[in-house]
Image (cartoon, rainbow, N blue to C red; front, side):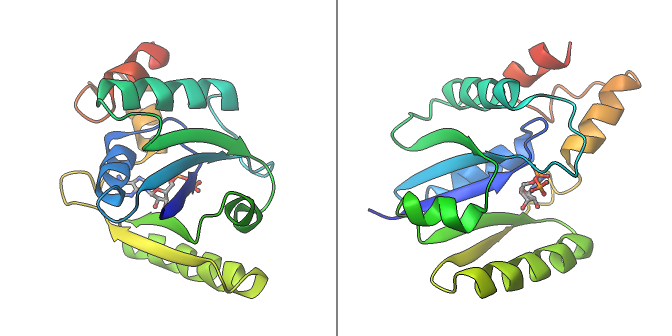
Length: 158
Ligand code: ADP
């Protein structure tokens, strides 16, 4: 069974993240969405709320837990991957600045554990402008974000 980890902040999960999850299911038998906690970052939602939003969004999409499960971890993602028998980490690429960040992340992960591969999926043009931070900013300023996030997330934004 091919297992992959999709790590991220998911603060909150957006339709861009969901698109990456759905497309990853064409490549892997099982995805573990991993809410990572970076103490250097300031998040809008706590980890438990983020997990609940992801789980509810997956139910909304009709994706079962044996295909996509959700977990959280505050250590090294490569360590989590190893203990969960995952050979790949999935990341999404939107703009060139994502590439720069992901390039060094990939190099660092490779240094730590070269047996774990990173797999990058390009964002679709329809969702490439969506990020959790722009969603939060748009919502706070009264912009209708209902076509950019799962319904479950709208409930939590309110
Ligand atoms: P992180 O803080 O780890 O970057 P994010 O939740 O912002 O966490 O993103 C997790 C992953 O999903 C990253 O690889 C990011 O590039 C990707 N991603 C985020 N939004 C989108 C989107 N709209 N389309 C494709 N990939 C995305």
